[in-house]
Length: 327
Image (spheres, rainbow, N blue to C red):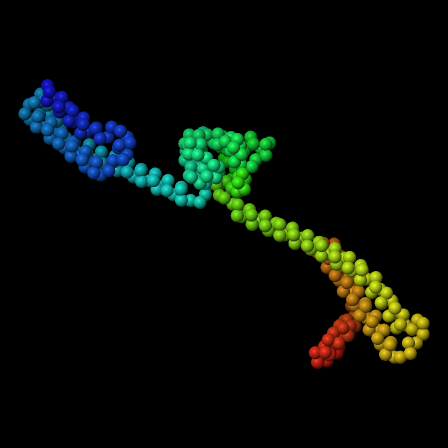
């Protein structure tokens, strides 16, 4: 009877002793597997010897090679699963975005460190099994996110109706000034996976562009107001100059006494009129920038316009040694 108990103990120890704990099976190495196989071989050898000697009641024990292969395959599968989980975990930690996966009931399955850092969660706060509403309520309670009071409920329950699918993307403003873009997608099993990207730099650049644009528009309005005021101030004396030169040209109060005066009076009138046209053009440009310009078709005397241009540039051309004349 004692031999029978010894044989049974050897079989149980060799067959199950090293795999009774799932954790131990998960961590088993090839060396562990070889030691287990050798122990099983030794136990079965002893039992077989006892059986041959009739010490265990003449029972016949048969060693099945399939059992050895089953143990080997189980260890291999556990090793592959462990390696896959390790690689996946390292990949999630390596990405620059926050990552979180919820199951169909809204409970957290897995998240990376970036996700916890965004919202200031501890590992206990964002542990597997916690509901997404609990995390949302925690954000509001701690003030981790900037949400108006009237929108707090909508923020907490923003992923509630997963049957219709979560929104494609939305923005969350954090207390520390950062801005997150959240892209949520529904999984095949009914859960939700969320990729959260820090877009603070992009938002800052857009705000800088808007500020620069607003400043440019303010400067442009100031310029237009300045030109309008200056044009008004210049028109008054110009009208006087043009009026007096016209009187001189027409000899309103008699002859000037020298033919050269007639020529000079004509130049004064022409230059004054041209300057008035330039001021009017400046005002037109201001109107165009303000979107208030109205185009009107009119006839122009090309020969007269060319002669006027030559008259204006002739002094400077002469100084540069250039002779300008209309053709």
